[in-house]
Length: 249
Image 1: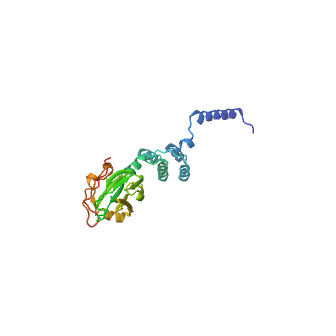
Image 2: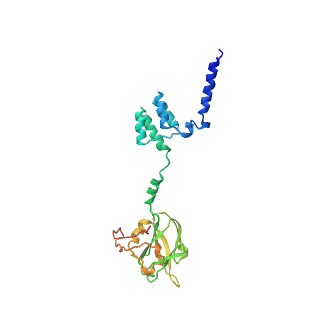
Image 3: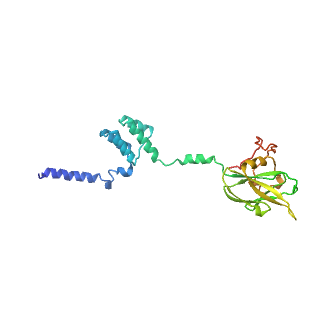
């Protein structure tokens, strides 16, 4: 059956209307590029589409929903089912980037330094000597007989040594961690020298607390040394009097 002239004219006019609302003219944005919106969902509900079909469309994404309290009320008023509204909220949450502020809050409380606990047990041999402690070749303090010193370390690799360079220790410091190094005075033919030994935290913590804080006149890099006013603990256990201050921020 051939088409009449009025029908052909109608088809031509419909074609022009379609072109007028094409994405090229900016009249009708492409949903695939902008994402599914609240209005799109409302229109699908009004068109009589089932909740299963709408949910499948939402899961297929992308979505650009407004899930504010006001928008959710409007969706409910428009007759959008609760399970569809819930899917819209979940899709909106999944599309949002991680909250930077929350990450900053979590990392703000993390310690920024490591703690190097250097100590020397009281011994009769070499008691008059006080070997130096160097951190990355910087002299920090001299540790006398029965003395201790807590040194701040920035996270990263550090070399700890005393007068005996052969016993240098490399530490990959982690923020908030404690490292215990014992100084043993080794007597030689001409003079003594300090030998360093890395000690496990359980043993080192107990031995460290038995010693006295290093004297003020034997502190050289004072900006690296943590203040320590605690008295020696004869039992080597925890003491509530110990006060190791953190550097001001």
